[in-house]
Image (tube, rainbow, N blue to C red; front, side, top):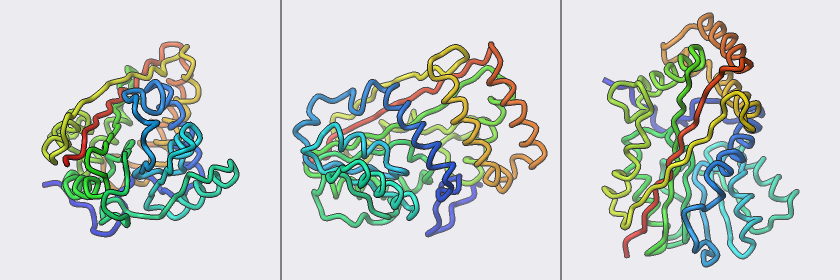
Length: 284
């Protein structure tokens, strides 16, 4: 039987108050947006939207990019980490983006917004919540969306041919499964991507669709160096989570990280991040 997340405790698998994690997420977010063909590559109606919410906004990169690209829209971001929210707010202030705002808020609890507050709600890489928490989250998303408003969610999986890197991703998937944060029945993958459309349809969203993207960060690719470093830092920061989940020892992780670094600098390093965005309309 899967362990269940502790009530009232963040289920994010890295210390969200870490400055290294803030920097990592900012770099990762920029490349994901580029890989997806832009902020809203599946939509042509964003100009008509006046209020947008980003769930689990982290250091705020997506919110800031949207606020800059759509100055007539009010763009809000929420995150459970007070430090992330303060950092994002400081960035908005320094960039003179008065239409970007951030609040400390737990998306697994009732959202502190009025009904029908937003034209679009975005969620990117929010699969750190438990499967059992999705239904409540989707009900809250529907409540704060106006009738006909859009909810879009993007998740990812990574595939690689290199032994240490693949092993570390496998340990991550196992740890997510052991801690009750995975949809996979075996723990071999996260299992969230094939569930996205089903979750939205089951919650009552209409006209549910999806779009897939692939971000190649193999050796020789334009983003190889940066995204390889992003992945390495992620696993370095994730070590306490993997150890506490019982999937590896400190010694094993140190050896795997050392080997991962060697693999990433080899000419035959191959890795692809698969991204899938699902979206649906809030019923009237």
